[in-house]
Image (cartoon, rainbow, N blue to C red; front, side, top):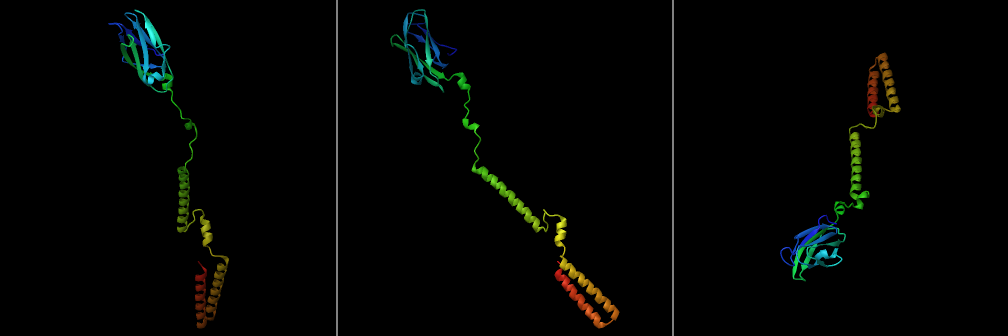
Length: 222
């Protein structure tokens, strides 16, 4: 029930007069208190507008004796939002009417409660954009790796290999070494022969051998 009742003063200055506030707000059910300061009177309570759908009283017509006070209890249905309408106080068998704008609000505990969306408790769904971003990252990382690998190859050095691997790759094979050794032996033998014989023909032959060996070495060696 509302802490403050809706007070109405009857017959203060004249017969059938009803003094009431222009507006009244209640949270839930509330009382209408009729104070009669004059002659006995009948007061009819009439609700109109949206207020009529959410309010009810045991009796709409109330007799108030002279100098007496009567409480009229107004039941109010549960509401989710403010409902406003008009309470008309009719006296003198319809001769005079006093209107009060009444607003009914939800209970305080309902006003303070916060509705929680149940969907917030569920984990968010993965979207295509997220997958695309992940795929994009994978593509970028793969491209970056490919670029680094290409850069390493163009620079003449494999980042994954060691310096020893480069030396082994650059070294000539066994057949090449064998030919080179044989050429050295032939050159040495020819040189000794030229020195021993001291002949022009031998010297020319030695020059021919040197040229042939040099050409062979140039072709075989990297």
